[in-house]
Image (cartoon, rainbow, N blue to C red; front, side, top):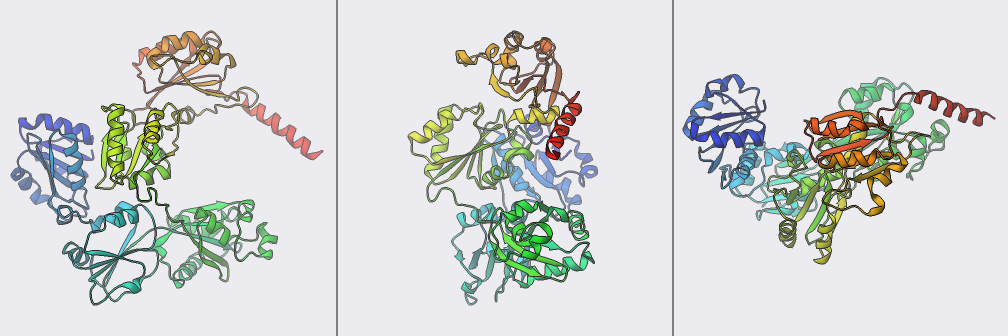
Length: 592
C-alpha cells in the first residue's frame, strides 16, 4: 500500500472511491494510521481539516520523511495540501486528485506555489541533478528567492530542467552567461545549473546535472583500484569539472574484467564498453600508434568518451596517469524545438510499461506544456514525469475535433505539446487525421517512435518471430471489422505465406479471424492471445489455431489483445541442430 485513504464520514464515500481508483490506495480506519505511517507514501483524509490535523499531529517528524498528506472535503469540492507539499509530493497529489474530482479545486498554500515560483528544494530530485549550496543553507537560498530578492541565473547545460527554468524565469531573476557577470553589490543569490566548479562572491545554489562521460584507458590489471579512481577524479576536478556531474564511464571491451572497472561498477557507476572497431571509427585529437598496436584502435579514452556522450564534444583531452589515461566528453546540448512558435511531438508510449518508453520520449514528456494522452490505451503512469505546471489530459472521451482544437489552442500560445499514443504511433496509431490537421494549419510537428506491442509480444512469449529456413517474414495486420480492409489484404490471402502474423484490434471479431486463417494455416498452428502486454495485469494464453476463438471468448479478452499466429511461437525444438549445422558449414568454408 503506497496511499492510505481515510474516510471520516459516510458522506465522503463517493469521494473515497474516486481517490482509491486514482491512486491505487486502500481504505484504512483512522485509528490504524499510526501503524501504517512509516510505510506509506501518501495519506488522503476525506472529511474535516480539524480531524486530519489532530490525527497526524503526533506522527509528524520531518518533511523529508513524513508522507504527503492531503485533506479533501466530504463533498469533494476542495483538495488541500496539508504537509510535505514539495518534498513529499502533497502539492502534486492535490492537483492530481482535484483533476479527478469534478469541479474540485486544489488548495496549495506553499509560498512558492502561490506566487508561481520554483520549488528550489525539489528541482534536483525532479530533474536528476545534485544540489550544493555554498555560502548559505538551502533554507537561506529559498528565503532569498521566495522573498524576491535579486537573483542571478546561470545555465551552462541544456536539459529538461534547464529549459524549464529559462521558460519560467520570474521577474526578479536575471539570466547571465558567466559567473563573472554576477553583480556582488546587487545580486543576493546565484542559482546555477552547471557541471563546472563555480567561484562567486555571493551565495550559490548550484544544481549539478549528470552530463559528463569519462573515457578511460587502463594498464593490464592496474592496481590499486581505489587509488587509480581517486587519481581519475582528481584529474577531472583539476580541469574544473565536478565529479558529481559524471554520468557514465566508458572503455574498450577487453577491459571489462579489470579491477578498476569492477570497483567502479560496485560503487554504482555505469560503465559502457566499445569494441576496437567502434573506437577506431571515431576521430580524436590525440591518436596513438602505440595504443593501436596493442588494442587495435588509435584511441581508447578519448574515443570512448565521445561515443558515450553520443558524439558530444571533448571537454578534457587525453590525460596520462601512471597506469591509466582519461578523457572527458560532455553530452550534446538538447536542441530547442519550437524556435519561438508552438511545436507538437507525437510520441510512441510503447506497449504499456512506463520503463519501455524511449529516452527521447520521456525527455519530451518532461518538457511538455501540454500532454494529451490516449487514456484508454496508455497508462497514466507514463505522464507522471511531467513538470508540475504541465496540463495533462486524457483524450479517451474527446472527439478528433476536440483533440485538435485543444492542441491548436496551446500551439498558438507558443507551447510545447506532446501527443502520446500507444505502442509506435505509426502502426494503427490513428495519427493520419491529426497530421492532416497540422499540415492544413501549418503547425510544426515531429514523431518520436515507440516500441510496438508486437515486439512486446515476441519478448513476453520468449519467441523469435523470424527463424532461419522456416519463417523470415512478420505480417502486422488486423481483421476486417468496422474498418474495411483492401481486397488484396484479406486475412485468408495474407495467410498463404504462413508467416508469423500479429493481428491487432481484432479480439472482438475473433471468430471470423480464425475462420479465415484456417483456410491456409494447419489447425495445430501455435497461437497466443496476449492481453495488456507489459501492463501489470498482463495475461497470455497459448493454444492452437483451431481453439483461438474459444481462448478469446472463454477469457473475456477485449480489443487490447494482440493475436499472434505462426510456427515461430515457442519454436525452439531442433533449433540447436539447425544452428549447429549452419555454423559448422560456415566454419568449414572459412577453413578451406
